[in-house]
Image 1 (cartoon, rainbow, N blue to C red):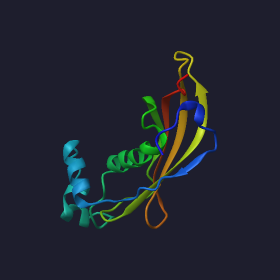
Image 2: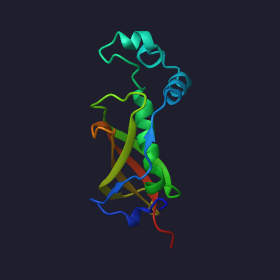
Image 3: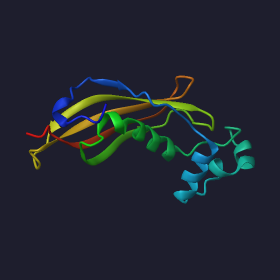
Image 4: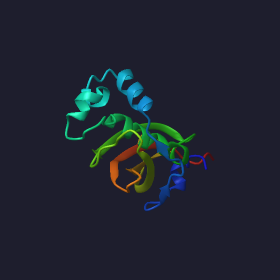
Length: 150
């Protein structure tokens, strides 16, 4: 299913996104180096081994970006005007190389746009779980979406 228009959403609607993703060492390494993040917990196996985690910790901004990315095909693909912001981002459990992640989305608010009558604001609550059913990332995303074309 492609993204929906603003008028097609209902508060309380929930989607369990079908695509799952097992995080690889390459994912973490490329994302961390592309974003110039020198944190040894993400790059240095020996430093990570000496940490409380005992192993490489996946970059949290990768986890966040993956969660949003897994949702796009069923939420905003082809209907997005702009992402307006993200709020209440939390990462209550760590992600490790080899974890398999899945995302779900709930519609928590709908608001007509005052400045763009042909669009409206949808607030999505995205939640990502690992294979142990632990929440590893959660946030609210406010997106300006097109209305159904007339």
